[in-house]
Image 1 (tube, rainbow, N blue to C red):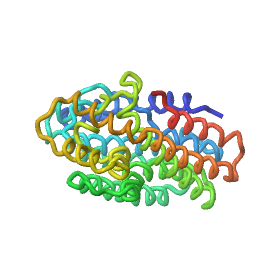
Image 2: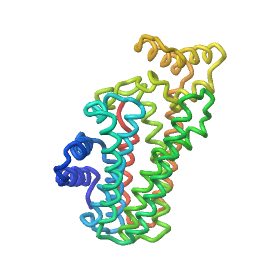
Image 3: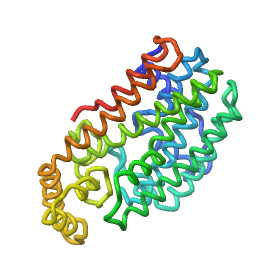
Image 4: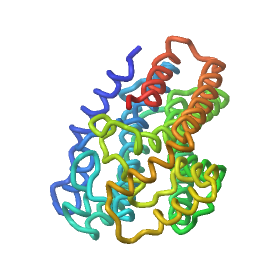
Length: 324
């Protein structure tokens, strides 16, 4: 059995060896660039770990794993454009390095390439796995729309937020695990259990991401601390703060969110101070633990050899227990 680090190395090697067309360079060079600047490769690693647990042939399933990673990076490319983000993984985003039109067109081509890679897998149930992917891709679009809708609202509820991140983040992790098992010939029950496991881990992962944006170590986190605060992103922390704040705190939070001219560090400090007053860090950590524990319960009950399940769990545990 390979561990997640070995699988990650295989995925990175496969991505590095992709031979893109050379013409036109303005289309394919941004694709090569965005896939070369790293990332955790969460989705392809989970897919291949799930396949391995079912005794699948990793080499045959690798094209589908690369397809899912290509699709994921396509969503990031377009997210960065919509958010007007300057950096991704410590490097300039595609629309900054090139321009917005390039980001749109290269992103669209990544979506086509993702489907091409998935369909080229020499494995079981490719058509069925493709259907799972297509359903997931539509759900991710729904999640992105909800996220955009939240930008103009201060009354987003925790349940609305959890549904949004389930669609925007969790379902692709869940889909990757399910596809990996399907392509290795697993029965429907195991595929659905792995999907449910992925949903729970995805929720825990996204809440951890929200937490790290405020309380993380920037050298480990890989992004600027306080970025969500500066762009008034409706994270679990901000939504929970509005929910638990007294009138004075709520009034100040509203003022901070509505500011158009402000000192960035001061805004980050003031919002973080309110979070600290309300123990939002601990409250978020408790919710992360709840989803994490549910995921553990699910994977413990999946009828797969422990030797196959353990690398999946080890990877999930590493993702959610990231250092601050």
